[in-house]
Length: 409
Image (cartoon, rainbow, N blue to C red; front, side, top):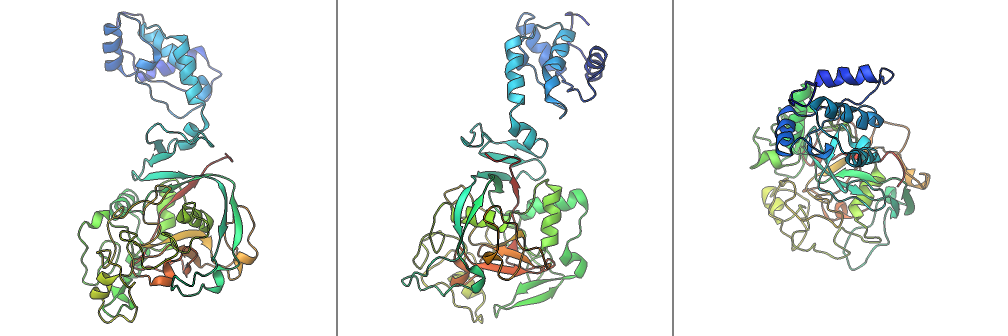
């Protein structure tokens, strides 16, 4: 296997590594792509650096990477520069690489200064971008009412306001899971949703009341069995907590905890009543809420729209139709309310742990956070909480996913 040619099969490199290092039961096997290696070997006059070969890891022990690469280079008759090998080994040793593999890939080259993890990643399964939300302490729950806002008073379950520390940073989906992404999941797994099994979903009628509609599912979310324009880009609805949990497991992530959701929803704005501040109406482009468009679509609805606000969408809007919050996250407020991992227990805020709360331990009901296209003013507040049975399927309820870092920053 000398330097006269660059044709080395993956199995040859694997066998050579095993012969030289039989004790390496979990060795890393490196594959040097034949065509690219041969081309670059010729153009470089027979001297090629490790960094110029195309290398693919099989996800095994990182410590064997330089050994396997050195064997591959020798088999090709190439000179592997020791400095490049050490550089590659150092990069491979970065903890975020092992954490992301094999469920996500970094987007861009920017690392967070506190965690040394990429600020943005993209999931392999559904191509969802995720944003790194920093660890830290924030005030969770209802804020003192601003009399100038005209907002109704908070619900009892939003109290007491309390300090919560999230000890680990976490990745959160940049936007809600879309119909197109959910379709990837069902195609890959043949999953049947709760609404498909039951044969109905709950949809708002012209009175603005949520009623069961036969045959309504995530594939056909309107009462007439149809879809909205650009349906693929809309957040998936008529999915239950069970459905969302199944999707998250398939994507190798999870649903966000309620504390994770509220920290991201606040976007670093402590003491704010609404995502945009403390006054009404919302500024133009604040989000997809119960506005004049929705009122015209539901003329018999008893629910009052937000005075002086128009967002142009009577139901859901395509994701990212409105601007991101300071963390770079879209639609945490408005469009659809979102399912959280936590169980709902009355009085939980009064006894929740100060760090990394996970919700109640009893019952099956789950917490829902964030406002939707059908929410009146009270639901737009940052501290607003809702509760749903794990099998509920509604036309203003969706989800996004999260992934907590393995170790504190």
